[in-house]
Length: 114
Length: 188
Picture 1 (cartoon, rainbow over the protein chains, first blue to last red):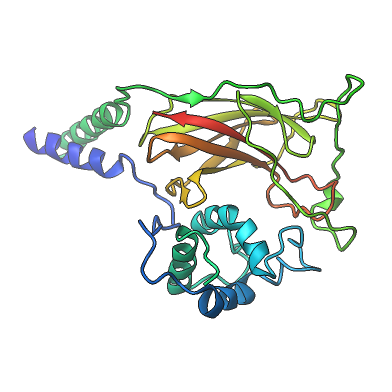
Picture 2: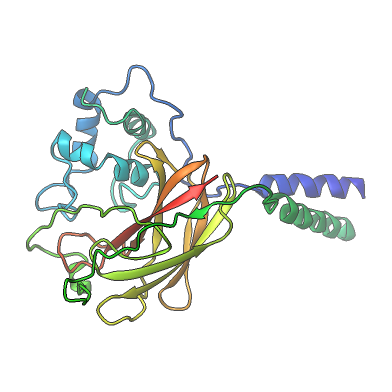
């Protein structure tokens, strides 16, 4: 009887509050120092993973990411969409774990032009 | 052994109900403010942007630059581009509790339910603070009515919850079915 109660509680605690999805909850708690560089790290990453759609002629040309100013203007939805694993779309090549951390970190830093 | 497993499962169920629904403390919710009138016309009529499923993945056309509209007060508004009307309710809003939003969506052109919109939520406290990933799901029923959740607000404050309809559609054209509207939610 006691064992049943203990196992039941363990099962309950394991299930309560679990996200259960495959998208990681890996948002950096704060801006790292130094912040990832837009010029050397983030711009090439965006070019490789985003510009096929997010540039003139692409399916998401209405949200262009060609210039820093365009990226900065969309920094909030970019953070929300990338963090929630909605972007890049599942049909497109995904960010590596390192690329994801670099992009999320840069966005958490406020998307500096560094 | 069978009796033991049944007992364990029973205790687990009871514990989940108690532990996951212990909603003591203050609750938040919608922030009341000025009524939304951005789709109202000077003559008293209403702007209603038609949509076309053919504009979901267009081959070309005049590209529009998308700007999200201002975040709205209350629990009802037209979407940013006057394509849809959205009203919503939610379960009890408390920090670090699962919250489910129920949205009723209609097309402004004819008042019909926005069926098959797979309405989803973009939830954030600030430009650098999105809601934690929570395996959000959207379930439709009846047509145009969506239960979306769970959402977890992990801090107190004035959050923004943006509803996206037909988000899989690009927004290249004015007639794209993709619509969006954001509301303020207070979390104590």
